Length: 214
Image 1 (tube, helix red, strand yellow):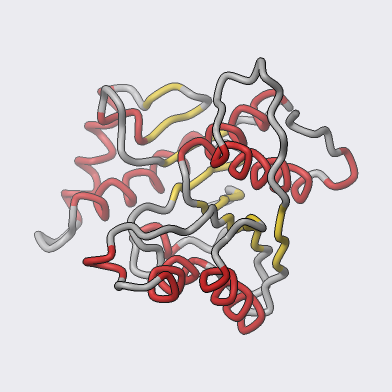
Image 2: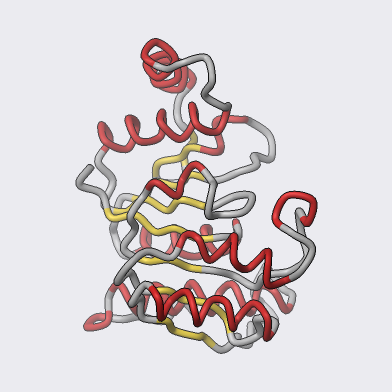
């Protein structure tokens, strides 16, 4: 696939980056979960969900050649590969869901890996401590692929990200949260973190012609 992909956690970060890239004139695909109103929202091109006919077609293609042991997310991920192969966007943003290390999207080798602030979630599956959870999420870090995270990461999580990045020879950038203007629609401390990560991602992609998000 001749597509530049970005692996990350957090839907608002996906939105910040995809709209910034669209504003710059690029075609952007996104793969996210969960959806809000329609399942097809998980697979979008230029902020428009895949059509019902295309969705049915690509899912059918995967099912026809797959085994019965594939999970729902594996089928959807494979369908996304076919869809983006055929539509050829300039960038595809894959939002990594539960975990990371064993998540379906981790077969991708991206051009950027973004990890938002890690907290205590899905402890029944990822482990009881932040170190356990961070280890699973750090599993998306690939050799020599730049990693961006936030300075407000808990110490235990940041330690894991630093160690994993070093082991993979992956350059790590720790961004500082950005202050949001009062007119900004999406407020909250976590949005200050997520938009900072998105801003750093755009900077990484277009270092010579960088235009800040805010």
